[in-house]
Image: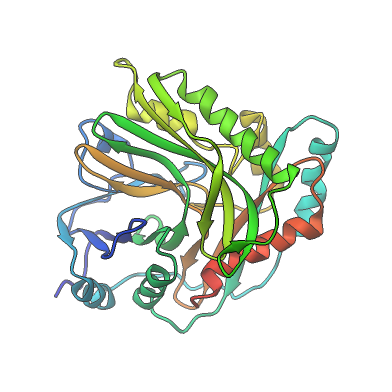
Length: 341
């Protein structure tokens, strides 16, 4: 039985029946982008903002386990060095909303994404939380990942930022939110949600045309993710010979689904006015292989400490957004993790 390792990730892709455990046995966790050239097997985790305190990391695949019971036994026996946090239920959302709505109302920004974090107590082990999430959310990518640099994180995310199958790339525009009742929509998509999703879709379409030889775009459709639904558009494309994976990935990230438009101005505004550090929330997570890759936006995620969890969620704001409605959306998204605690 493995007791210590340099880092690990256990993940399950949407529709898969079994998870996969990737372990880096020894050596330093890579904090650069060398995994891209040449492609290595492992798991990538990138923050919303890359800096010395929260670097991009790559967990090398030294060991791979795909038996469910062996995975759970291995995780439960791993010795993890987790921080302890002062327990707090502070909430910065409403205060930050009053700042975010100003540039939207005066037309300086077209869209902004406002997020927040809350801490919760849990008596479940990380392995139990992961297993519960896999059972509850078969349509999401579920992961549990640890390195000394990042700490321990878990997420249930529906949003693909970039997939690769041979020479075909795939990304999606996912935005707009509606609560489901018995897995059914309660009303037709309203103008605000349709416009919010179109902003993301238009941005992605414009971005990939800079790198794509050919591409195909789907019509928007309803995508169910747990007890809520989003509007989704799919993009499939081949990249030009002179383009490379990292260039495409950096052009897409962060999309307006987690940042806003204009992109650079929205990114700077969020960092200056949101009131806290997103860390790895709204960053990128996912497994990579020699000729296959599944990278997701790190949504509906939690940072796991020795004594509590910190949950992260966000919502997209437009000029007509109202704080009560957006806070309700935030609360519904937070239930994705809260429901398994």
